[in-house]
Image (cartoon, rainbow, N blue to C red):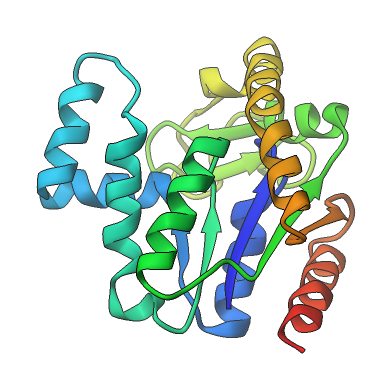
Amino acid sequence: MRVILLGAPGAGKGTQSKRLVEKYGIPQVSTGDILRAALKNETSLGLKAKSFMDKGELVPDEVVIGIIEERLAENDCQKGFILDGFPRTVTQADALESVLQDMAQSIETVISMNVEQQELIERLSGRRICSNCGQGYHVKFNAPCKNGICDKCGDNLYQRDDDRENTIKERLKVYDNQTSPLINYYNDKGLLSVIDGSGKEEDISDRINSIITGTAA
């Protein structure tokens, strides 16, 4: 089972990926997570990525793809995986297809989680994080008992710069520009399913699982 989850920032890819991990016992492969792991372990590609990040530059596709390739070759990915946050462009999608062909594998389904922009802004702009212990909250969906104060350690909560409304709108614009061609790319290959990413987590999971079980059948 090899699945790609697509969705704008705030669409819930991470949440749904974790649910899939629990249900099917296959790993979630997130570019952010494996890049951090490569940096921590000081792999050759991790050090190469660090050289760009230290200069404030984007990590080039070939380095990201190399790190992805190393991760997909690990034993826990042999029965399948969920790709979360990758690919982001058609160039990355082509490279991923090439990598998987070398492994005699292929993507089985691509699920795009569609959420209205205003709801995405509400989800992201409401997030708050404890400055001390890192505990996460949401002003609407998971509010602390006392406004602005962490329930866990009593320290102050803050809003990340990435979660301010103007920044969110820019992030969504970048996502749309990058991903529209990607959605067409996978649609043309007959791999794409689009679901409504709004509503209860359980309902969204049911939509995703119905696609996955239909593909597996």
